[in-house]
Length: 240
Ligand code: ADP
Ligand code: MG
Image (cartoon, rainbow, N blue to C red):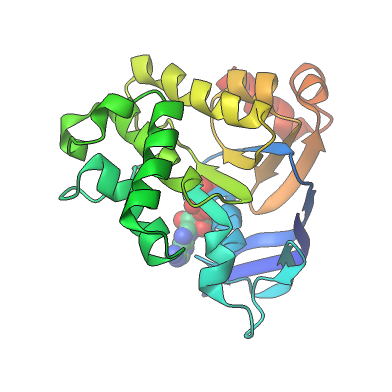
């Protein structure tokens, strides 16, 4: 479903992604870990073209992401993204945060969009918050709204960039639980996170990055018990 082949990216003179080769199948949950600054967010953001690659090949569902002919809105419609800072519209009610894109982009009627929005709000466990404003919700609840907003577009892939890093510790679990449910239901997911428990339990594959390279790719069982690469060992010693 997602294929990186010899992908390079530079920010000006800075070489941020180096020879990235990665294949993600439909239904797979891939967790990306690695030190701060190693290029995890950049790699994720290339998938929906929030960043452009410098060279190599990147396809989503056989569509070349950086082809001039690729309609960026069509590409992004299929790719949901959840950020560290929930990025909800503060002046819109929860329900309107979720219905906005389905109405505008998918052409749903307000009624259809609200029905879908309620379905996903119930799914993430906060149906009763539909008429509140984001500021009236806890961080964990806001992040669950952000996930519901992504799901309401019925994407084929969900990208998560440190979705629990901005949360108070007691709210991390409720967000991870929602993600775990999605994973169990077969959603294709790429998750950047420092939550090693989640990686161990939910990932089909762990990808370890350092200084712009993918250093190691392994099942969680292999990666956590017996990492092959020294840099992965050092990283695990620091975070576990
Ligand atoms: P990670 O998510 O692993 O912490 P990032 O992908 O955010 O890493 O960043 C990788 C490197 O690229 C960092 O050194 C960061 O400072 C740099 N970087 C990120 N975004 C930009 C940008 N827009 N312009 C220049 N450098 C950037
Ligand atoms: Mg990052």
